[in-house]
Length: 165
Image (cartoon, rainbow, N blue to C red):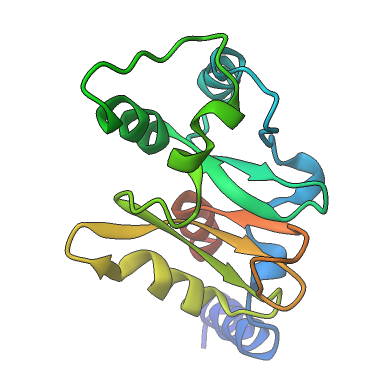
């Protein structure tokens, strides 16, 4: 047996004894850029462009996720009426109905417990919710309920990065 083989076996044993879970994947609450109802859309779009991210959770006063600001919400707002304008100085509250978690975009959002296994997170991102809908982000809360305070946000990129380590 070679040293590299033994190292691989040890790494596999560590993985099996202490599998990666949601509490160790993604971005913790204190590092997540979030949207508030009073935020201006232009400011949020600029922050997203500069930060290189595509989803901003919208939180209520209890830190619970009430929606997600993303491209889908903007496009949904634009196509809602025949003559809709979107302006940089509009606020999130003005388009909130298009940002809600149940707005019916091409993305769905899931809530999980901190103990949810990485393999289960991967399955959620890989599976299609409907023929045209996939999971865009997963939010971690204390018991996996959407009414609880946000602890972490996980994207498909986070799962890919965790799977390769």
